[in-house]
Image (cartoon, rainbow, N blue to C red; front, top):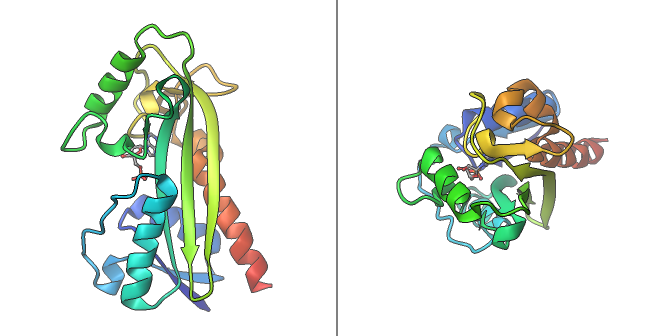
Length: 194
Ligand code: IMP
């Protein structure tokens, strides 16, 4: 069975990808390889950061590697917070501060259009392939809902009236940016196996 490394120690992301590739591709986490390095995420784009992580692991272990990066892109803020989503409100990472800063910057702006974008890169000896998942929506005036994480309480996906955090994880995990990017990666890996 083909083996690949997922350059993450996020158990949730790992399980999501493992579940859909069970029996086809063996997925290893960084910890399982004995890698506890703090891999730099210093690129100015989501694609660049995903590639930094995948290349770091590929160079160190010589194994096919996937890595991802996600950002919330708000139209009226020229795509902010984008690649800086995790620490938008300052260090250390704090979801409440991130949302507060975003809501303050947007103020009463009428155009509240936003999208979550996930980029997954797969790097092997021959190539670097990118898989993208986008979900469109808008930023609400105030947070609502308990589920999820990050900006979920203020992101309302198109076609719905409630935030990701209010809609709940089951629905979110079916329609999200990450689910779409993962399904594109899985389609590719499945085709490669046949
Ligand atoms: P990462 O690339 O998955 O680490 O995501 C970077 C940052 O984007 C996170 O720290 C969150 O602030 C935000 N983010 C990523 N995915 C989501 C999501 O599904 N919902 C809400 N916020 C997210």
